Image 1 (tube, rainbow, N blue to C red):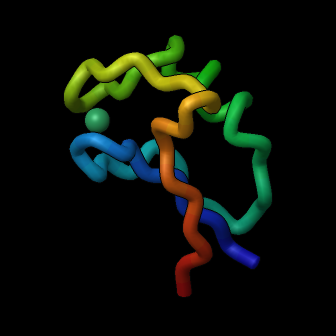
Image 2 (tube, rainbow, N blue to C red):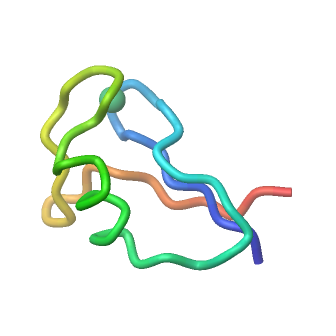
Length: 54
Ligand SMILES: [Zn+2]
């Protein structure tokens, strides 16, 4: 199932793809922050939204 990871603050799409990736890996790829709004991303508390997309 395709996956979409979105910044919880600005809804910038951090990752969209066919492969499931662990959110921590996606966060790591962005140096731990949202490239759009600069929000520091962490898994706890949840700062990203993970949604299936069509
Ligand atoms: Zn953001």
